[in-house]
Image (cartoon, rainbow, N blue to C red; front, side, top):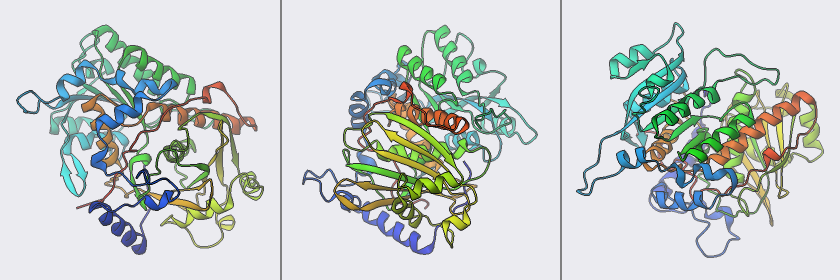
Amino acid sequence: MSHRNTVSSIERRQWLKAASQFAVGGTLAGWLNRETSASGEGSATSAKSSTSEQGAKSAASATGAAGASGAAGATGATGAAGATSASGEAKRPLRVAAINSIYRLRSHAYHLCGRVIHGYQRNGFHHQPRLKLTRMYNDQTPAEDLGREYGKRYGVEVCGSVEAALGGPKNLDVDAVLLVIEHGDYPVNDFQQVLYPRYEMFARIVEVFRQSGRVAPIFVDKHLSYDHRLAAKMVATAKEMGFGLMAGSSLPVTWRAPEIEPPLNTPFTEAVVTFGFDRGVPEIYLFHALETLQCMLERRVGGETGVKSVQCLEGDAVWQAIDSGRISARLVDAALRKSPSNNVGPVRENVRKPLAILIDYLDGTRGAVINLIEQVSDFSFAAFRKGNADPVATNFYLPIPPGARFFDPLMWNIERFFLEGQSPYPVARTLLTSTVLDLGLRALKEGRSRSDDALRIAYAPPVDSGFFRGPVAE
């Protein structure tokens, strides 16, 4: 994901002040839910408190599709290599295979694989993951390909097939798999979806699992598939075969300004995410916006209960939805005020062609993500809570490329997943966002709202959402 955001000095000072308060034990989210009982549920949880025990409890309580990211993910391969011996000595690093669409400068594979090789920063210090990139397969090798060069330099075998990268068609010898199918030259269908072969690559990986008689956890970068039916198949396969599956965007785990972690059972009634990107087809950034919305709204009363219907609007229809109250103008304003990139002047004069996905949840909660391309170049969230007239809002801070340090928190959570065999957050979230995105784009093409049983995905949110707190850099 590329980004062109800069943070104002005022926002930066406020963010650093909040981060320092959190680092010394201050409570940064207590104000979010002043109405909660004195149980302490309103306090922000430090990143260190996000233990595997908490994640396991949360995922174990998930219903429906969420079970695919539950205890079944604790495979023999991961458990053996990721554990510590009885003498207290750490065992060997996990062997990781990367199945990529393309490996070029600033591609997602470049950023994720690069963090396995070089490490990344956490809490202002360098962190070298207990992972070893053993092999990679790159589906496309254009002139700017860096895969072969990096393979020779860092001892990573670049293979000619998915099967070879895993050790052979019947010889799985890696402990974990990165599936990074983002960027490259792939066709676009009539629904404005890039036909990335995520499912096809996943199916080839699974076939090696079957032939080898063993499995390993898989991380799928971004949405599971452009087709929600294939996405559901991927989750069902992981559950059936008993391997861990994790997927999604970096947005849910990147820094937030202010650092807001809504307590579980926050009484959200409506929420909006504003963002602005116009690179490529619209689904690319709509997905990130949906993950931003979902990682917050899933923490509402009762957890995630599923979606009733989705609708996608563009142009004047978006303004009409705001004027009619279907999208709250106050929430749009509140989100934009948190955006360091917010443009000067009236939004409706600046934005030539807005695009929005509207979500009606089964429990009556309403959500919307709005692409305001000429107004902002980052992601912000705002929501109403029952019994409180004031919206709560935050910016999801994305450090700019070339470093793109929003991949640091994503890699940290991937590493936890690989080492523990347990996804820090349920794959059902990304199954839901993948389904909303697919049906939303189909609704835009068809000019109508879409309802489907596939949207009825219920799951329990994690105790800690896993987003990074504290300093962005040393």
